[in-house]
Image 1 (cartoon, helix red, strand yellow):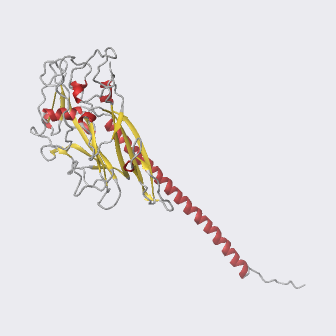
Image 2 (image 1 turned 180 degrees about the horizontal axis):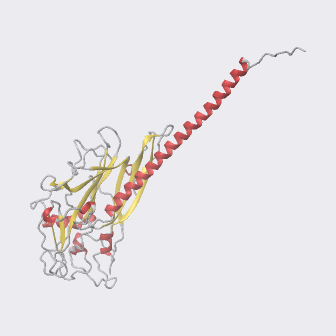
Image 3 (image 1 turned 90 degrees about the vertical axis):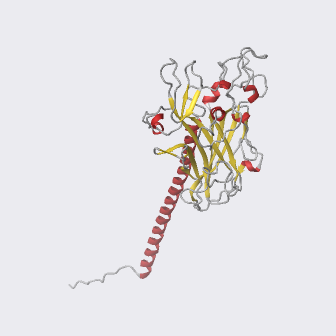
Length: 399
């Protein structure tokens, strides 16, 4: 019997076309899913970096601000509740100090030093539009500022001693280093309460024999620059300029502020409110006139409570601006500051439009209190932080 050989048959053209179409649809679905996953991951990464930048900004600021008013054991007499009740203090600040004044024996008078020590934080704003050619506040330091933001100045001593090996105290001490140092007297026979200079330190410790500790002055200026790496890149950046030296050479000789360094990119808004402890137990205002009088330990209303001091808690909040500068009366009573930091994402989010208005104040009643709407594709988040000036506030607490 003869076997019949049957011809092999494949896919028809129609079947092949259907298979190709189905395969393409599956690949397209997988590709779409991959693109969406990558986009979501990119958005999530961007949001995480935004949050990280905001938290890091507040952490940097809080670390510095929390030390404001630390003077190595020295307490200004006008804020010393253990001081004399008969002798009026002579170290009361008279004016708001110029934070950008270069150090010299002529410029840095005793009164100027008292102003610096008595006012631990100060600031102003950068108006919109920015004054041309530059802002009148520390014009050689606060360069290319972002409009509608604030400038904050923080002063204190480094908590570490020179020669301890830490980043801010790696030098071996005053006579061999061009930094600016502060020495507080701990001996009753010393004629000066403190010295602030570069090389001569003669004040004594509590035993009136050993030298009192010498600590480096820390003075920092924070502001927002309108670019990150090069002018025109439109990446607002939180900046800090510090009073000190470059390597071992005096900056400007005499010492002054170092060139500002970039801290965090994407910081678009920066506002500061100052909490004033300016009401005494009698309800009277605590001003410089009251601080320059002896402490009255027998109050008319509360026994053994000084009538010309507050209690360390803020009674009101103010914002310092160039149009309405804060006075020495106000700044000497700052015990708390509120920070508002508006951070922008690094990249535009497709399909997103930021139409929000951000309130950078305790109570926003004026259009200038807001930032936005920006109506662009960047995502933003507002971070706030209240920081107590422990070294100042605790002095106001009646023992």
